Image (cartoon, rainbow, N blue to C red):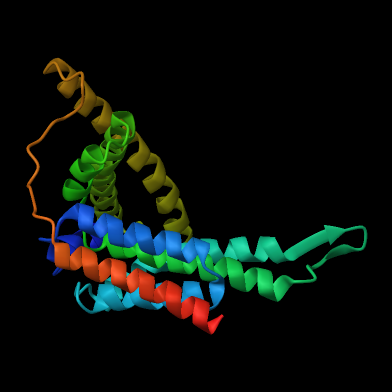
Length: 245
C-alpha cells in the first residue's frame, strides 16, 4: 500500500498487466471524444463507458473511484456556476442560455474526468512515466512529474507523523484546539517536506545525478485485441451520438 488510494487501486487493477500505451490510447481517445462530441449524448456515453470499464473489466473499487471523482466534481460545479452568472448594470443574473451552457460544461468536464480517472486507477505512475518517455514527451515534463510524484509521499509521511503527535497531545479535543492544530499542522508539514526534499536533492546531486533518475522499466506487451476493441468502442460512441443527436 502506497498511501494513495488511486495508486493502490492502479496496482491492484485487473488491467495492471496491460501495456500502458494501450491504456493511454483508449483513455486519450475517450477524452478527445468527450470534448469533440456534443454533451448530449456524446459526453454522457463517454462517461458511462469510462465508469463501466473502470468498475467492470478493470475491477476498480467503486468507493475508490467515487472518492477520486469528488474533487473534480467540486471544481466543475464552481466552473459551471461562474459560466452561467452574468454581471451587468442591474447586478448579477443568469445568462440567457444558462441551462444549456451549464449542462454542456458539466457534461464535457465530467466525461473527460472519468476517462482520465480510468487511466489513473489502472496504470501506476511507474508504468506511465516510461510510456511517456517512449511517446517522446519532453524529458523535462516527465522529470517534473516524476519528482512531484515522489514528493507526494514525503508530504503524506510528514502529514501523518505530525498529526499523530498532535492527536496524542489532545490537539483535536475541542473546536478551538482543532483550528489551532490545523494551522500548526500545515506550517509543520510544509517546513518538514521542504527540508526532506532539499536533503533528497542534495543526496542525488552528491551521487552525480545530473540527467534525471533512470530506472529499468518493465516491458508489457501490447494487445492487438485490446486496441481493436478500444477503437471499435470509440467508433460506436461516435456513431451512437450522431444517430441520437
